Length: 309
Image (cartoon, rainbow, N blue to C red; front, side, top):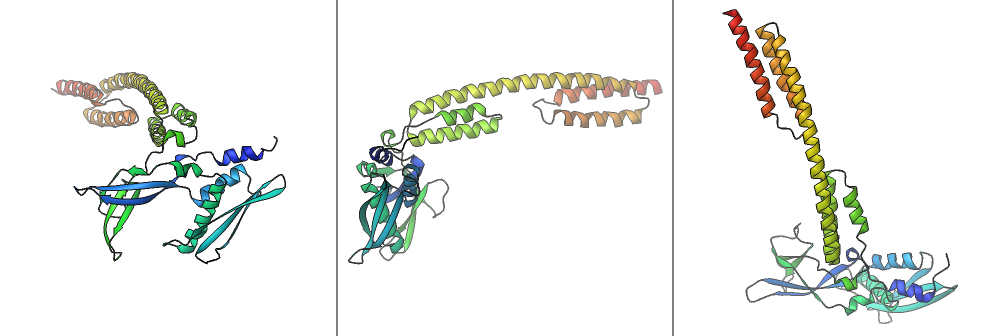
């Protein structure tokens, strides 16, 4: 396969990222007149996301990064180089030290800014800020929300928490979504449990992609697949019911051949236990069959009593 041209590589570098590759940062937050919290968030890329994109498009050995302190020693510069046709092309940008983990923040920020010069994630700057669904929560750890924001006063003392969920990025700012792998998972599900898991995953990704057409396609297939499982369950129940019916009819007749009352009770109790084992892994209700066995036992027992009289 021929090598991509520089323009083709640049086009691939500029392609949108999947929703799960995007991170979110709180830009500002407050509360309305009723005390209900609100949170505005912005999307951003991680350094790892930038590196993965460079590896995928340029190749791990065809890009390099040089970082050095800024002349005023207030942050770091990043020189991001890409090799094409045997020549290295470098673009520089920088970032200041951050309040939290200053060195790590400056190095990461400089890399991401340099990556933007190559077009990586540049489209994210064209997106508006997003309102996030949020609510007050009692603590930092809360599984009902994607993130929890810790509220601090001027003295940096914690006074509350806000749980918030990642917004849905517009479909226009996402790669073209391919629903086929998720539909294949639904089709290949061999148990109701597997089907439920495949459906949950399809619903999750279509929601993240904000793709109603894909959601409807997955929903239609899920309904069809559930119908197939229901039909299979009904056929299986009918077969199991017939099998248990024949077994009970056959075993109940053996009670008529028992020679003495003591053995009769032992065999009766054994039959009830065997019935429980036989229906254990089926949807067959054993109640009516227990009644049949008991009726056969009572009839045989009455016969012994009449004979003894």
